[in-house]
Image 1 (cartoon, rainbow, N blue to C red):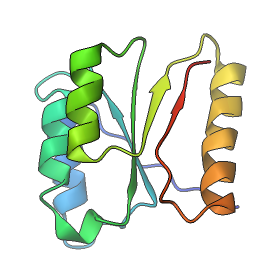
Image 2 (cartoon, one colour; image 1 turned 90 degrees about the vertical axis):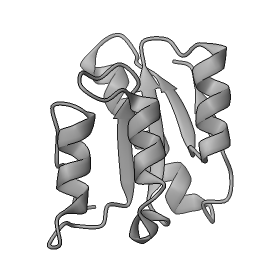
Image 3 (cartoon, rainbow, N blue to C red; image 1 turned 90 degrees about the horizontal axis):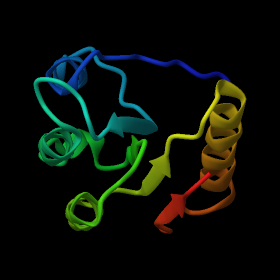
Image 4 (cartoon, helix red, strand yellow; image 1 turned 180 degrees about the horizontal axis):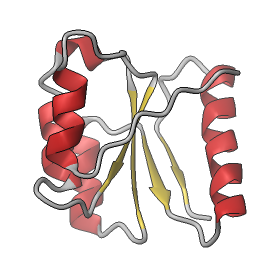
Length: 115
């Protein structure tokens, strides 16, 4: 599997990259809840306004996700919650699970990971 990862330092930069006419339409968008300049919920809200990203799977991640953020994210259509695991190896395993699950399913299922 070929993977191209495009990173942004904050929510505004991420939206700018996604809004560029030559932007790659991502299969996945990972959003940290606690970003500077524009938090994850506000970023998610703006991403959902871009119809060409409707097929992108959106994963919210953070060291912890409070109930208010979880409820609001679900209402906005997030596909998955990921509690950041401790350590790079555990994060790689979580990413493998995400990519495998979406290749095994139709993408209609909303899920959550707590490792």
